[in-house]
Image (cartoon, rainbow, N blue to C red; front, side, top):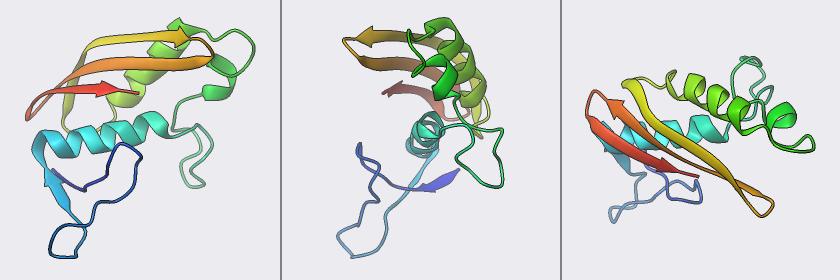
Length: 114
């Protein structure tokens, strides 16, 4: 698997040679999984049913962490190379929803935090 490299702010990374950086293996899975977790349902005009349903599970009154976890697990399993979501936890930190996940992939384990 290959992907364009991105940093924690989701900005593309320019290498020392002045070109866009490319990552492979576990690093590529991490980039794609992080992107999948940031995609809001309805955001992609050609795939409106994909993405995390943030509106009903996270932003509508009291967040439903169980629904967020279920939607996140489904979304993470859509990432090429991901075989299993080994662990997932979500919690509210004040008014911020945070999560951590461990994925078993074709390339090894990937830890994801957001």
